[in-house]
Image 1 (cartoon, rainbow, N blue to C red):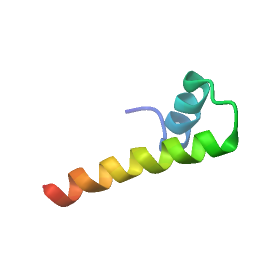
Image 2 (image 1 turned 90 degrees about the vertical axis):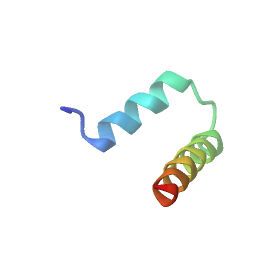
Image 3 (image 1 turned 180 degrees about the horizontal axis):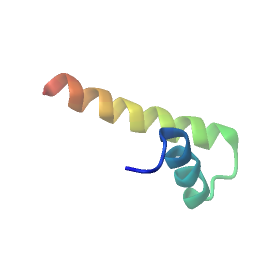
Length: 42
């Protein structure tokens, strides 16, 4: 994978067309919650 995590997150934010920082934070929290749940289930 050539993208660094920071670049991946930056691209995700651009693609989602967020209108506020609160929307960005909520989305990132949801994403990491899902990742953490999957890791704990493994």
